[in-house]
Image 1 (cartoon, rainbow, N blue to C red):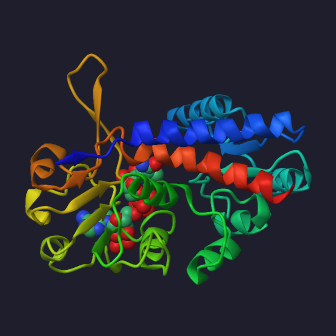
Image 2 (cartoon, rainbow, N blue to C red):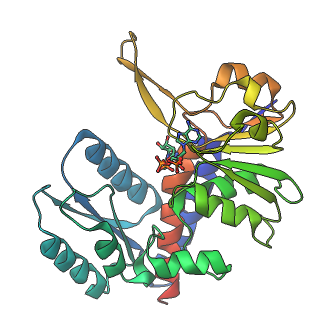
Amino acid sequence: MKIIDGKKIATEVKNEIAKKVQERMKAGQRVPHLAAIIVGDDGASKTYIGSIERSCREVGFTSSIYQYSATITEKELLDSIDFLNRDDEVDGYIIQLPLPKHINKENVIAHVDPNKDVDCFHPINSGKLFLGEACFLPATPYGTIELMRRSGISAAGKHCVVLGRSNIVGKPLAMLLAEKSDTGNATVTICHSRTPNLKEVCATADILLVAIGQPEMITADYVKQGATVIDIGIHRIPDSSEKGYRICGDVKYDEVAPKCAAITPVPGGVGPMTMTCLMLNTLHACENKD
Ligand code: NDP
């Protein structure tokens, strides 16, 4: 059984990005600049801001954070987006979701300049992804596909079961796996909360990709002997340890791993690849402007 080391692969990709940034600097070109709009100041936002700033520092990008209180009006938020759209120094930016209830998420996303939409939330980029055209790829599916590619796991000709159909993970991931491309060519089944016989369907997968947001729901009986399991879920479960919690995924790792040909751990699997692929998208956004 192979444990897919997302941390190691993410470090490799970050080193490659950092090298490109160095080369740009030597050639007198601009350094990529990623901005982030954060609304509200809960613990999750702070962690996210910290990891954006740290990742940008590691690869040599400029970063800027625009943090607003949860009481910001939709008009004020749209004005802030206009400002980033106009700022030639900013190559790409993200808007942390979810937004407060009084703000219309669709309006906000539609306002983002698609050329700076490094999260791939804008309908133009989602449409391009669906059509198989060049575009930014959403960071988590991108990270998952890149992790598989760099680990030598080919989806071609395999039955991939994608568990979850969210717009940011499940659906785009399924599209990428089904795409006529070097990293695609799989036969893909998408499952969700209304799928009958979920266990039986999952157990037919050569590659099972899980993004359901249900801690350790996927037990050994969901998995075919010799399958590859990619666990995208991430959860913080309170426990009696010194830290007061443990991190786990959507897959019950200890009982599933012995059945697998390969598996991603949580933490240290898909997670580190997500932020890294956001950096890759920002580099591409900067290169697109050269
Ligand atoms: P969502 O809650 O948006 O979507 C969950 C999907 O799983 C839905 O399609 C839902 O079905 C389906 N689902 C939920 N419960 C079940 C169930 N019991 N049986 C079958 N299907 C079920 O989550 P996200 O896609 O945003 O995230 C999924 C997981 O991935 C989360 O744990 C999240 O924390 C993690 N994540 C990790 C990232 C990383 O960087 N590693 C980044 C983004 C997310 P239905 O549509 O019918 O409701």
